[in-house]
Image (cartoon, rainbow, N blue to C red; front, side, top):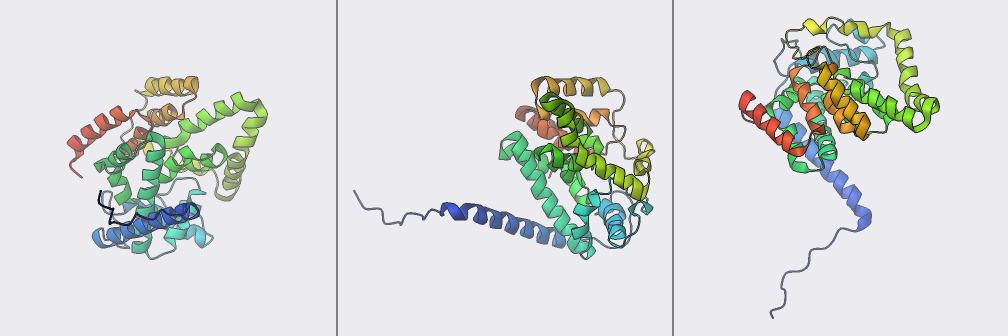
Length: 293
């Protein structure tokens, strides 16, 4: 036998695996941000729905800058999410608008992919969801579906702050956690899990008034794609199944069916909770309806 002339590839020491992985992830995010900055230009002036970064420059960034100046974010007509959402937005909003938008896009796509991977258990269906035409509209708009989705894989005490950033995506998950907390430890466990978000919500009312009224008329928005109330029974069944099986994925799928307002790109978030073959089938339909990547 001929000796192997190629040296064996040196294994990465165990203590370096996590730092190397983190470095590769950060490097990938940086490359994506640079690509977004070069390929998807964004400007300061407001624009109509459908233009690049409409949510970022029309609502989220201006509202975050209001908070950084100690002002009321709900003076921005397009902003209606919980005020703690702005804590996540502020570091990006403080940057020049184009750089902040590029990083927001890149970090959001990376987090969305990670959450989809965790929930589906495989990289391919996660990529199919993230790269679908409808999902990409959310990223181009500068929306924050990815922040709400991140809450699905966090401990409930922390995850509640995230899923409630977009109730049309996460309210059913909050209800699922409420029932599961009651099952685990009755009233004491419910208080332990829900006290932090409840106290912060009450404090936000003291600071900014009853801000949920900001979204009272969103059901009449021209870009509303909600099927409420016609598919509420389906949502009830899916949530019942989640509670019966102790499976959060069905709660994730059920959420939009309870919501009076759901924009198109938010419908891809529940795909993360579906069985993989169903994900492929739905995404094929999305590609057929809305174009190629």
